[in-house]
Amino acid sequence: MKLALFADIHSNLEAITTCLSHAKALGADRFAFLGDLVGYGADPVAVLDLIEEHAADGAVVVLGNHDAAALGRPDDTLSSHARLTIVWTQAQLGEKQRAFLAGLPLSVPDDDMEAEDSIRAANTSYIFCGHVHEQKLFYMGADGHPLPFRPVPGTPIPTGKHRQWLAIVGSAGQPRDRNNKACYALADLERSRLTFFRIPYDFALAAHKVRSAGLPERIALRLERGA
Image (cartoon, rainbow, N blue to C red; front, side, top):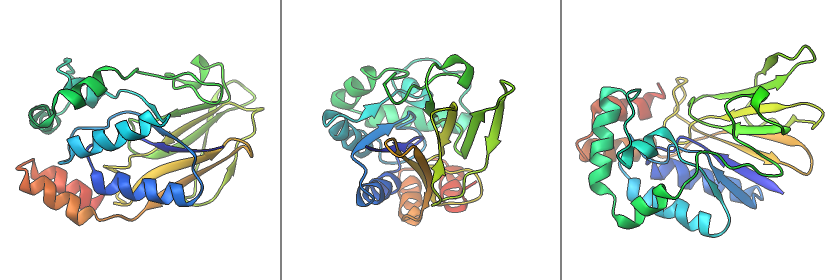
């Protein structure tokens, strides 16, 4: 089984469709969307409808803090421009999209994966999560402390089940590490391998849509600059 992992899509249709196509070409047969499906970007309805189609086919989908904010749940941690885009997003969503978001859990335990707050809290070999917007990998060391492992995009990493692993898959829709390529990861659960990817996509079109929607210029620039 090959599990494709996407996070922090943030209403970026160009990014998620490109990443999905890449993952499917590599044989991905299961999909997980790890929160923050909306916010910032200009295509919340199209992105949610696309993800809902995958959910109907068995994809795992969890709720992010921007998704919860789009449902009207208070979040004092959001920046001023993030709050502006949430208000805009709320006006775009129909009952169908709101109902889909409202039904999403905060985490999904599985035989192969479980999203929790930390490695210590998870009784599983693999923890996959988003929210950070950068790709990172940690494993639990022999001394009981998590150790960083620097992933190289496109290079498979052996992730033996004798260790616990925390994989932060990066942002598909709004990378922030000065690289504007979209992020996602592919877990080969049968061979215990994890591969991080950076995928070029039409960020210029995504940024153009942000500007055309009247959303903050900073968001369009972030798509162009990756920061």
